[in-house]
Length: 50
Image 1: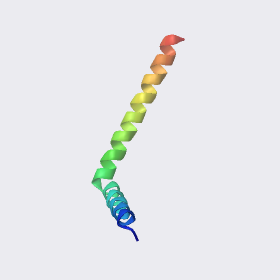
Image 2: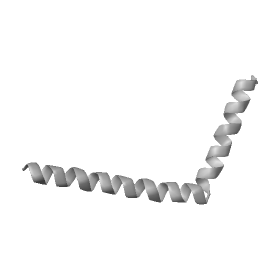
Image 3: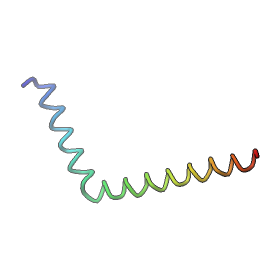
Image 4: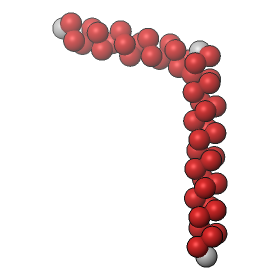
């Protein structure tokens, strides 16, 4: 296995581990909050222009 491939696999595994823990939970919460906010903003813009 090449050094590049090995490094890529190590980084991938480390990121996966982090996203399965508390950091991942926090990221998921923040992402859901952001998506809800963007949907709300889009709906308000649609209603305002109607």
